[in-house]
Length: 334
Length: 274
Ligand SMILES: Nc1ncnc2c1ncn2[C@@H]1O[C@H](COP(=O)(O)OP(=O)(O)OP(=O)(O)O)[C@@H](O)[C@H]1O
Ligand SMILES: [Mg+2]
Image 1 (spheres, helix red, strand yellow):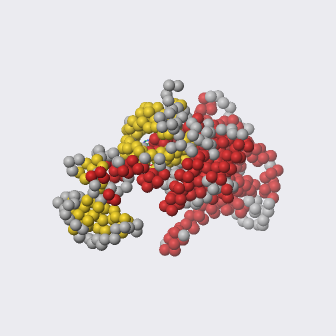
Image 2 (tube, each protein chain N blue to C red):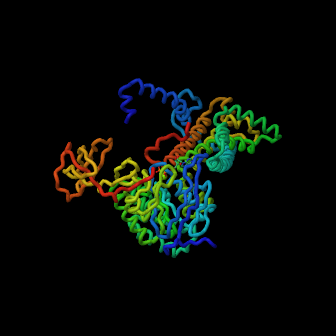
Image 3 (cartoon, each protein chain N blue to C red):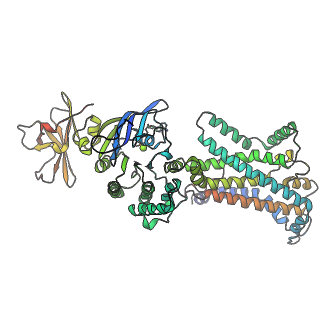
């Protein structure tokens, strides 16, 4: 083996995609993609609907064959291996629990298939049930559970196998907002304590920001940017990345650059400012308020977010100065 | 709820439905009623009796026809259920253009008139120099039952989707284990329902059996046809009543099996998709 599985940071490489490409009926759905994922990392694929997130996950799990390229899991080339021979598990968006088995039997299924000794099966089931707080529900059937409980069972069923990698395809997509917030925190906590590599798919940028170590921003089958939540927020590389994550102000001048709304300062004085404009709208959001300012002599509006420390009175139609620091301008590609 | 409202608004609709039901069920009810009539004449009622049922069970020819019918029904049901289920599983995996063609061919026995099925099978058997008997009837019943089993099982499979099997595969199950522990338990009610339909069709079939049966393979419907030519007797009414009751029970059982495991919304759909 000449291929090193060390990434140079002392962490082991868990997954390596080498020029992986996927066509359906001659149409490219995933453009050539190279990506490495570290052991214990929480990596999120983020992008709008139809951009190929599920397809990438299904190629890693083994349900789809890449048209070209190689997939390595823990150093081993698994491109040709069927799903049941890969030491990783997929949590499906609609859970795919076996309806004719109880919660416990669902969790036991993978262990039985792998012929884990009975005593160890028992221990692993109990542990998975404890970690996902399903103790009271172990004897129930899936149709007797709520959506959030079913989601927990799907995760328990996967982690009982002690996979090297857990793939999750919009696992919280079908749940309401409050439950989603709770489960996001639980899931992140679980990932930390288990130390399993998570590859997580979502189209919710807030979810991606709060949970991930690194985010892969995708658009129409292409990677726009890969980086930590901080990187992709503070230093977006493309126009798509700049606008897909958080709010942003775009300026087309001699170059294309962006300035985050919270970096934009507004002053009642009009002298010595970068630009001037008229307040078009004031949005009060509790912890912050937002001013939308229509620029003078330019067909653009600028949004500024002011926090609770700002006690000044603003009114719609007021003429104001708009200012930001040079280092807050982020040049982006198209 | 909706139909009740509709019938309130349109009194003709309920009258029409009532007449339609009467039209369908009066002949059947007459047979059942006269099977308990004390008189041999089917024109007047002269008191209640069970005696035609007991003479029926003493009748050697009837018992032989019953035994033939049951042997043929059980054998053809088992074979057609296995073959029909396997066809449904195999065709689901097909991806090429031939798929629609194969499905079309499987629907043929449902669409082709029985008389043509019977005749063509008879020609085939005589070409093959096969003696007409239980074997030829069993083969004939298998040919048409497979289609019905296929239709029922494949609709169940379509309902199930692919995700459960992918989940099993992902959890380490081989193709066989996936079939054994996930696919089969999910489609099982459909398989049993298909078997019950096949059994009912076999017991009830007259036309095709008439063409391909021989002297030692008289089935109940063929026996009934033969004796009706000599006049309708109360024993025949009793025999028909038994057949009606058994068929209806089997169909109700099949319906119930198909309804189970579906959500309430899906319930109330018909047994067959046409
Ligand atoms: N089996 C298939 N055959 C043909 N085209 C497919 C197939 N699976 C996916 N596609 C196409 O590939 C593209 C990417 O699909 P994919 O499911 O990966 O998107 P996604 O990013 O997961 O979207 P979503 O957020 O809506 O789930 C879509 O345009 C889809 O129509
Ligand atoms: Mg998807």
